Image 1 (tube, rainbow, N blue to C red):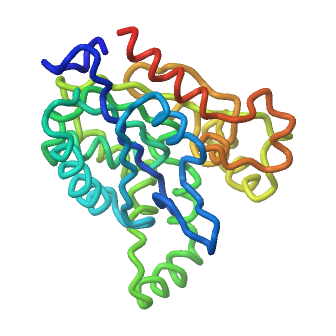
Image 2 (image 1 turned 90 degrees about the vertical axis):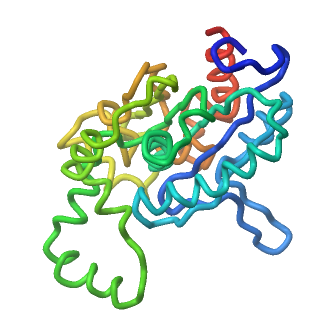
Length: 264
């Protein structure tokens, strides 16, 4: 793989790290049913022969806390490959992309990573986060209640536009890593009802979006394009309304990313 081998055998496929977003998980067991965050995507990538890790990090904690947890899972995984693999490719959805940037810049992961691909990541924050964390009822009631319950909700505060301006100033890209991004957006008549509120908030402030992240906020490094899907369809979580979408299973789009990276 051009650009990722770092001395590894030319036919050695790089390991893939899949990082989940806010409220995410690696996999959930519901009786006999297993739900993977990246539905069908890890299997499609694994079928190509890549070693894959989807670390479980706190679903709602701060970027710094989630990044530390991610690093603590990734380094043993890479060490277990025996030092014969190429440098890893991280593919991160939503907030996972910010966790990855923090790990690379601040936690020493740059030497282990060849490329980071972020998908619908709010690199410049989200006006939806602004709405919730600047809303008077949330500030007066919601946050104190959550704190009393002992819940870590640092993620929401980190995703505001002001917080992300500070984050970007303090988290420069590493020259050792190639940065790519995918944005997502679909028209309002293809946004599922549970996601309509976020879509409208962001639309008024930032324009085209996927119901949680705008196209402009999602662009970082080399922008590889805008997928015509909503935020959850980007990880293969589909609703009946998605039958109108020109894309069904999103997994082939992830394989196209790997093909793009392999081409150099």
